[in-house]
Amino acid sequence: MTEHPTSAGSPELRRITARESVIGTDTVIRRALPSAKLRTVGAWCFLDHAGPVQFAPGHGMHVGPHPHIGLQTFTWMIEGEVLHRDSLGCEQLIRPGQVNLMTAGRGIVHSEDTPVDGDRLHAAQLWIALPDSQRHREPDFRNFAELPVLERGGLRVTVLAGTAFGRTSPVQVYTPLVGLDILSTQAQADELPLDPGFEHAALVLRGQALVAGETLVPGELLYLGRGRETLALRCEADTQVLLLGGEPFSEAPLLWWNFVARNQAEIEQALADWNRRSPRFPAVAGAVTPPIDAPSMAGVRLKSGA
Image 1 (cartoon, rainbow, N blue to C red):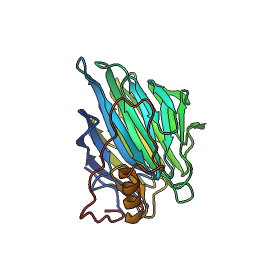
Image 2: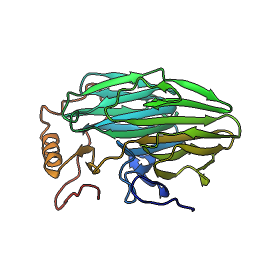
Image 3: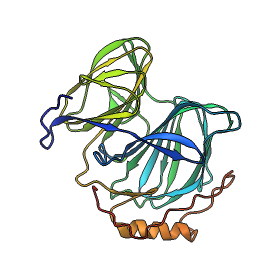
């Protein structure tokens, strides 16, 4: 891999191999963020790539009620459907081409289920770390059924978050960032304009692409650093790329289990509140699976940016 200089604020190339994990009962995903090599891309602090998968008859994704604090969950649905339920009383079926945005703030609980077992699923699940001014806010949930879409030759670009190509996503975020889904219907090359004040990263969701001169396939995140004004992209036919960017955090937030915080005491308090089923984390009406037990923090010492 050819790397650019890696001084602060400079472009660079860093390849991160996503690790396999399991959500719910047996749904295998590939987790690209956080990793030992990269904690955040702007405020984007978590990235799971689920699928594409065809569930066997009688099987599906079922994630029981679990809590969150200090973040926004951001679900981009590509194939299949998922039913979201939360402690605010929201019940929303997300379909392909839509975004679900749940703002946890001081605390929320939700569950996620594929409504039909034996169906297909392909999605990206991301978290956005909330800034200090918003991380203790009241929780909220929104579904965005329509997003800006533009055609660039053989590329179809959906603006998932932030502003790009003069189009702004309706998804409300609280720090400067961008998220793009780039789909090629045919082999196509393009040079995409970037905000040089952002750091960026790219993940191939399906197919194969040449990103900044590097071949990228599913299962690898390519960190592009900061300071780029353009990005050379060449996609094979039927390729889909997720491009993320944002202003870098001065210090990476603390992540543990489903919590995003600034210090360990906040996480320990959230854990205690969940374990005793405090009013901070109400029940999820209609949930079809039991609440998820939290892991133990015994002996755990968290370090920001570690």
